[in-house]
Length: 540
Ligand code: 9MR
Image (cartoon, rainbow, N blue to C red; front, side, top):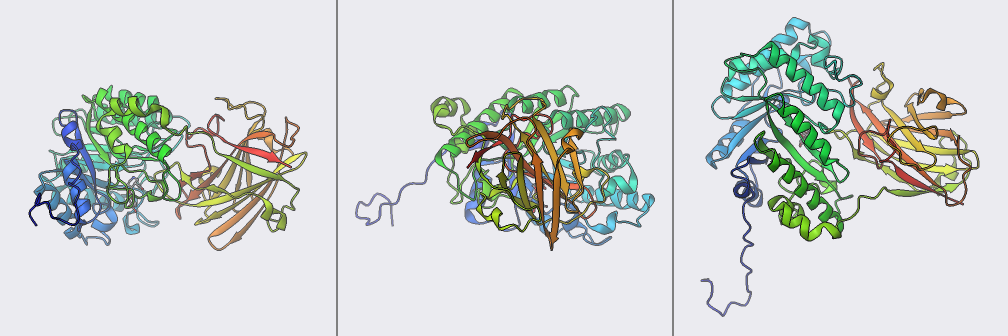
């Protein structure tokens, strides 16, 4: 029916005309998003092509799908995605040539020698980079190779994740894979890509690694070996944006380019985003884009990780710019016009206040089965600090005049404790700040209590061990840990507030920590800083 005839029974609202994000940022950097699979819905295609001028295959170019069996390269899916992206006039970024996840075991499993592993790594990198040569502008050559919370970032080799590549080849696998990629596609910009690079120690390890390798190979095909650092950017409402900026500046000082490669901001819970949370999320996006604009000289591309909340890998936390119905959220408008959005909305955002839960009075038996636990409030421990969604669980807390009692049930655990570092084993950690002082360094009322699925405990500080007791019960892929934690510096009473958090460390079958889930503290600093903890209210 021709529009404007005046006799239509249903007036159809014209489509909302919004300025494309890619147009707003045309003179700053590329705007990217994921191409989740070969066939996209009409809405997905619209979002991807209207607002973005770059794409990353969300999964199709990872080692597992590209070479599931030795020599058996399968490029159909990835080719279809790349061709469609290029046909839409967009740029394609390649993700990823080497990773400790989504890689077939045959490449580097036990029994594979160093020589064979090098052969497998370089053959994969070369074949794939050659195959897409001329069609991708850049590659994440190596993904997520550095540990979280590196203890000594000056020694980047000691900060490398104990991945199968590391175990079979050693730390030189890093330069080996970059050199193979450069030879195979000299025109592509080669990136090292990782999450939590707003963490100072992790960023420093990456800085030191890239610095050393670029000094060692200043002329790898006419330029230094590593062209760029990808900051994934899986952020949340607590992310400290000055840390994000400090890392951009640090990396930029190396003369490499930086891209934000997987941006999202988790803000809601259980697939629900309140209005206030939506606005807070918009403010985080707005502030981030202001930081990115300021550093546009360094930043080549900002890629979002999800076309909408529904299809995001973290959909339950509504982290994307478009909602399940593909409508633009405050996050989108925050990114589109940061200063205006901040000016209009600063007052109405939700404060990212520490979560609070009640702990009821009672003294349980420590066998994990005591019915008294049923009276305790269930605390979800399911916000991931890592870019891998692994073991999660729930905690319950009781208290009496001398102790806190914490019961944590963990799901999806692989029950691995082979790593010599107890934090890399399947384990739970409880953090207590007895006076709820929220201090940026541990004081004498603060403690960290870790117990693995086999009931082996470790403490920070070591003196926190005194009077502590625990039990652990394994049942299938779940385990339960019960702890008795003495209150060392306070006299608990009805109404007392205690700083409190719970962490679940999830190991991989190879014995490396691959996931960390928290109740409240997403700062990544719980072991030294109590300011991000949630709070327990003791009630009698
Ligand atoms: O979003 C991706 C999800 O669909 C996959 O199941 C998962 C495992 O391959 O990978 C997700 O993307 C990850 C990316 O490749 C690397 N950084 C972390 C991302 C989120 O896990």
